[in-house]
Image (cartoon, rainbow, N blue to C red; front, top):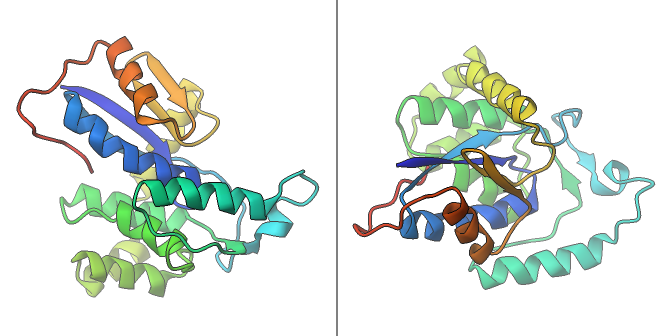
Length: 209
C-alpha cells in the first residue's frame, strides 16, 4: 500500500475542503493517507489576528472568497460559518500529532470543525483540551501533552519534510514522486493516484487518519 501525504494546516479553508476529498480517494485506491503538518501562518499570535490585517495590501475580496468556499464546502456536506479572524495553530498541530502518536482518536476533523464551523480559537490551550475531550481523550492527558509539548518533535519533522520536498502551499497531495497542490476535485486526485501507479482497491478497506 502506498502512502498519500496530505500537507495541511487547520486554518486553511481549502485544506478543510481537500480533506473531505481524501476519504473517497482512499476508498477507491490502495492508499494510506497521512496528515502532514504545515506552518501556513507561523507568525500569527495565540490570540489571533483579523483577516483584514493578515491580508492587508493584498487584492483579496473576503466576502466573495467566503461565498465560493461556502458553496464548495456545502457540496461536500461540510458545515461552514464565515469568520473574520484566524489563529495560531502550532499547539493544535502538536496536540494532533500527540493524539496520532498514542493511537488515540484523531483530532484532525475536530480541529477543522472547530475553526470553520464554530469559529473557535484553536490557539487557546483550554479550547484545545475541550476539543480533545470531545474527540474522546481525557482532559488530563491532553493538558499534559500540551504542557510537555509531546507532539513537538513530529511537528518539526513534518515542517522539515515540507521544506525538503519543496511544499510551499496547502493543501498539497504527494504520492511518491508525484504531487499536486490546491483543493483539487476528486477526479484530479484520482489521476494523481494513477500517475503514481497506485492500485485500485477491491476490498473496500480504507486507511484515513
